[in-house]
Image (cartoon, rainbow, N blue to C red; front, side, top):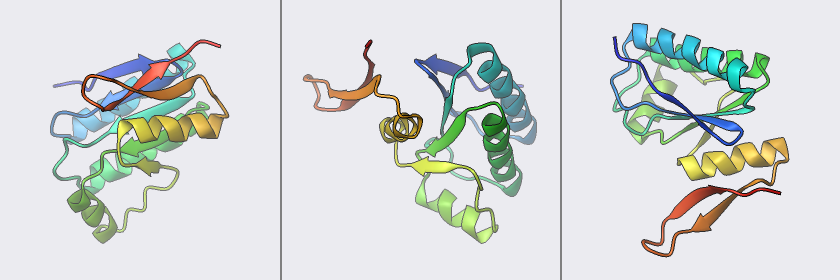
Length: 140
């Protein structure tokens, strides 16, 4: 069984789902993420689903469960990179994903979490080489 990596970036955990989410993989991610939140004390979770073409009802409910578990462990969840077809499918399935905020991309998700926590240690800076925004951690 493949596992989804959970990366720590500052006070946030980043989960980038790059594989098809089978039921067992989704359940393992839920457990791994809860363990990492406790181990790191992070207060934000970003789940990047930009590589997912489809999301079934089980994976949708698991994402909602991850958000609920994270909230109980004092971490907010933002799902980023949702494709229009995935959004349409979730709505058609009647899954509103309660407790999950969404953003178009990782950078916007990081900004959203930083605003919610009142943190200003996260900022976006423009990389001069390719004019793309990259997250940077600044120290107070």
